[in-house]
Length: 381
Image (tube, rainbow, N blue to C red; front, top):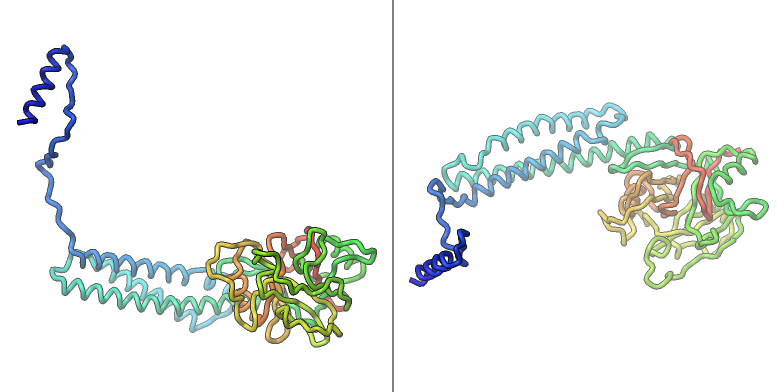
């Protein structure tokens, strides 16, 4: 009744005003569904589950396909490997079968819930198989990557590991000589790779590699211990660091790379010998990357904290490996490179974004920089 009266009121107003405009009532009437609208039917929850499980399985198959066709297996094969080739051929055949099973599972083609549950169980079973294949193929890929890296380091080269590109050199102390530098004979700081290279070659040295070898202060003096030609020029730094500063040098444990009469070593700072007799050179930096075969405890897998990284590690057979990333990587991935790919039991971070390396055999020709300590590898005379 009220609604009818309201409409009459609006009509009267229209006549009085002489307006031909339509005045819209200030209420909304109930919507009337179109005559051809179909009633909404709720989808069977198990039908949705079948579809989701099928999509998940298909995504897993694609993931394994990507690993099996990735650079670990396709870039410069090292040698014929019947087991590897059989593994990949088996996956290629089974992946076709798995996809056919997924394609043959339309979600609404079964009449009962019991049959839908059977399909879900079948899809789950295949998912477990695909997951197991993924681990097996990924492990085989890691083996192939490491073989390729080993073939490159003869003694130096560029290579890929877990999607990132690196350059590295393996130094056998019996064949190559390592030495640290900060200032020349006139007491002038070298500062960059080019000036040290020029000085070494003037002295008749055949340069194999040069890289910056530790962090430094604004005046380019070494940050932490620095020993050159048996003489300590800067003392060991055992401080905790500035309050709140937990990056790089003061991300404990940090460490020392040094050479004594027994050979090259990388140790945590606390284990550096107090008696420096016989130590030819030493540089302190941080953080440690690998400690007794384990990654630094504060590193996080997948960390977004990426940068160019350079470091040094010691292998079980007492060889030294220097490595630098071509692109930014996080600490976890860089440490994993030293432990898993380069076989280092202990490794130390040298520096980050500013790092450079002169390594002609890997086509790295860096000659710049504004450094403190610099390390050179030369052929023994």
